[in-house]
Length: 244
Image (cartoon, rainbow, N blue to C red; front, top):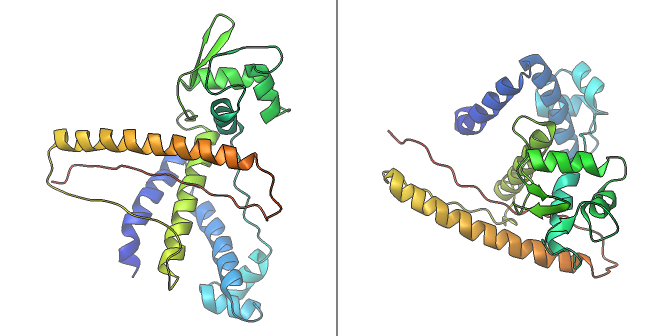
């Protein structure tokens, strides 16, 4: 069974090495997640002995780690800022003044987060190539915030995206009726030019769909509801490599 997971474990190990995460630190964190997963899925009282049997960990490890609580996914305030810029009626993705009352970048930044200065947010978005500044006007270049390579924001973004994708896939294979949409198309033996054509078509179609969902979700959020809140994440990917 474990050899079937190599395609999943190999890129994860590569990421951990790239980030400089020592294996003992990762193993300790993984032990805690094993205990948490066993506790949530345990039928009956989750005693240390029972969790030890389910995880293969020693009872002293289970007792030490059973109070572990995974960190809540960190929200990226810059991603929210860009989303509001595109969807709020006063903004709609148009160029806005740097400062002053709404609609302005300063007002939008303060709406998203009060403990980070708008200038800091603006500098980060400029460095990431998300916005440009023309005099006193700020222009939106990209429709989403892509954090700088290697930054904590990028790692948090990756963890949320891949975590939700894996949650969906895991639930699908452990449920009698898979509840989540997860599909992929895969071919081999195509030319680089053919793959490039398909990738561009996928990029265009995916971005158009994501922008449509973003607009619709923003409109829905503006309508008050008494129902318990539900979050969602929708995404996609296109990967290719030399097949020889």
